[in-house]
Length: 181
Ligand SMILES: Cc1cc2nc3c(=O)[nH]c(=O)nc-3n(C[C@H](O)[C@H](O)[C@H](O)COP(=O)(O)O)c2cc1C
Image 1 (cartoon, rainbow, N blue to C red):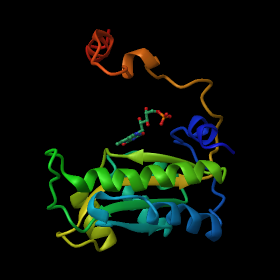
Image 2 (image 1 turned 180 degrees about the vertical axis):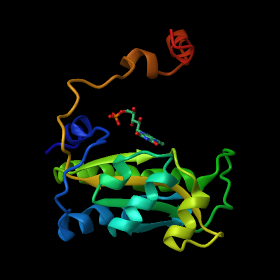
Image 3 (image 1 turned 60 degrees about the horizontal axis):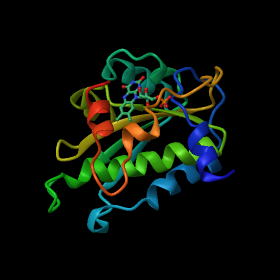
Image 4 (image 1 turned 135 degrees about the vertical axis):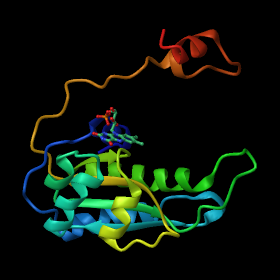
């Protein structure tokens, strides 16, 4: 599949089949994360792959009661072991680096016929003790992974191109979209 088709096909999956994810597919999803770029090539992203049903159930509460977190056969806690580096542009590198790795995983998963959902609505302090993650490690996101149970949405709700990209100069259209116009 062309990469743009994979991107078009990916959507947030919030209902999952019980069917487990094959180990080879899981390994390819994780390989996509391993190959992701990072600032200064720091490679600070770390992943705890949760398949144990009792842990997945416990993660539901840690994820603000989102039930699909317990339903997905795999939940990946996406962490960073280095949270210090601030780039010259003023942005912290680690959430960006971890996000790139997650995006790689979501796209590889989509190419494998698997579904994913980013989970930012969770309490890191509830996740850490469940998974034995040290306090020094930041839990940046959770990612649900598994075979989708439902149908994909008919379309994506996205801004039009002119609202998000301008050529050579900032344009009023970009400003308007910021205001939700
Ligand atoms: C950083 C981030 C955090 C998110 N957190 C959650 C979440 O906690 N729960 C959820 O159901 N979806 C979550 N989402 C999914 C978004 O709601 C979804 O990506 C967005 O609505 C676009 O829909 P799509 O992924 O189907 O294209 C998150 C997405 C991102 C990128």
